[in-house]
Image 1 (cartoon, rainbow, N blue to C red):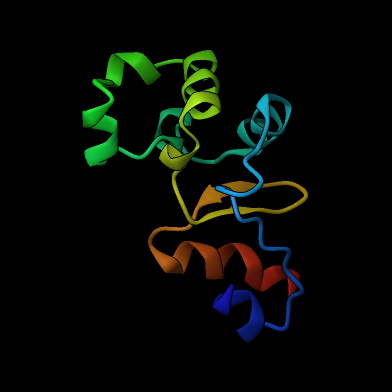
Image 2 (cartoon, rainbow, N blue to C red):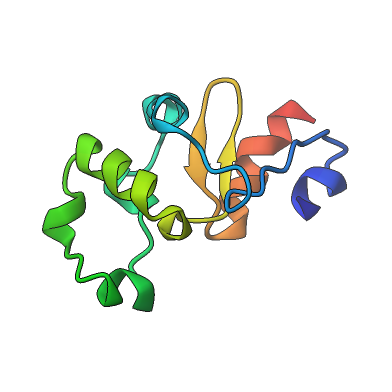
Length: 102
């Protein structure tokens, strides 16, 4: 959000835990995604606690299913424009994506 503000770009912030993306929204994001689809899933302690492995999120369909069930596993920040979606790490990626829109 800060990068968008610094560039003077209006941004909609989606609080993914309050309004998680549904399967159709995830599909739209994936179609624009510059990163591998499996990168949308956080591999954190919760991932391990749920007993998930990389094999459980190896395909687009699996990613959508897992994120539908476990919204907290959605990688963030996720930046989505009309044409592109990417995971905002490192921050320079967000700047590179948004600068032409400023």
